[in-house]
Length: 70
Image (cartoon, rainbow, N blue to C red):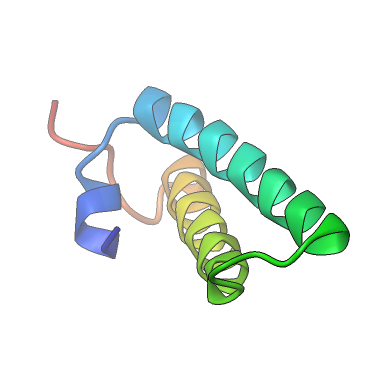
């Protein structure tokens, strides 16, 4: 997901997305600890996507960037 796509979502949608990504990261870490996962780079991608979502939510909370146009 690109940053522009993330910025186009509302805070409520981003909260849902963040919870989904955190669960996915947990599952990936659990699988990597117990067995081999087919794409280990997905862990890194999930971490970075979580960081993007949190950054945008924080920008909105601080008023650095505005709310999505919805």
